[in-house]
Structures are given as structure tokens and as C-alpha cells.
Length: 138
Image 1 (cartoon, rainbow, N blue to C red):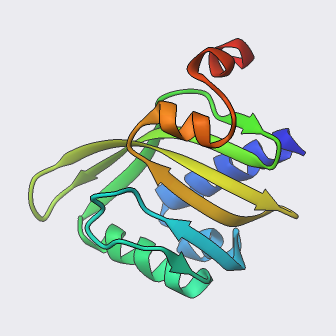
Image 2 (cartoon, rainbow, N blue to C red):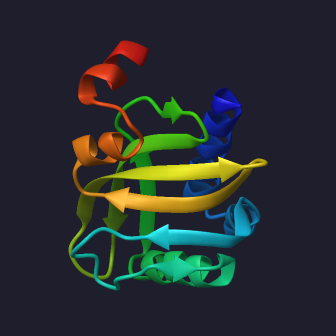
């Protein structure tokens, strides 16, 4: 199941980068929960697909263009996938390159929980791994 979850998350990022929000919406469970990191402009948590998608779409609308670019391999950890990425944004204000790590929990092919971390090591710790463990799996 771990590799299937990785492929689901690759597809989710591809859908986001293509601007296919209907496809993104379909990847989230109706009861999903999203937690943002400390210092995020709109603190969560966000509960339910509609609340999560509203927040994601609000973030996206802040800029004229944006993409998520993985900066490392996706890491499978049981029912979770760790994705370290840079969110590149442009337009309506200064361009930005925001790096953070996403931890997704999936069940039956749907995202049921997502948490964002500024610190990659903290994200790995949340799934029971260390930097050393993560590199051993690469």
C-alpha cells in the first residue's frame, strides 16, 4: 500500500500544478483534517474537505501562478507519505519560494489527514523516522 500512496501523492501534486482543482478535490476524503504549521497566516486546523479545499484555493488565489516542486524523494511510512517541497509563487506581490514538508495520511486511496511542517526533521519524527532512516530508504 505504501507505494500506491506515494503514487497517489505524486498524482495530487501533478493535479495541483496543472490547476485541476476538481481532481485535487477528489483526492481528499470528505472528513479530512489539515493542520498548518505555527506561523501560517490562517491557523487551522481545517476540518472537512470543503474547509480544506477552501483554504487551499484561498492560498492559490493569492498569486497569479504557483507550483509545488518536490526537493527530495517521497517517503512512504506505513499509511503516510512525507513530501518535502518548495512552493514557488509569482505575481501580485513578491515572488516566493517557501520550503516545507507535508505529511499525508491516506486510507483507501484518499487523503484523510495532512500536516505541514517548517522543519523536515520534525516531520520525519512525526512519522517515526529520522534523517538517517529516510536516507537509508532512498
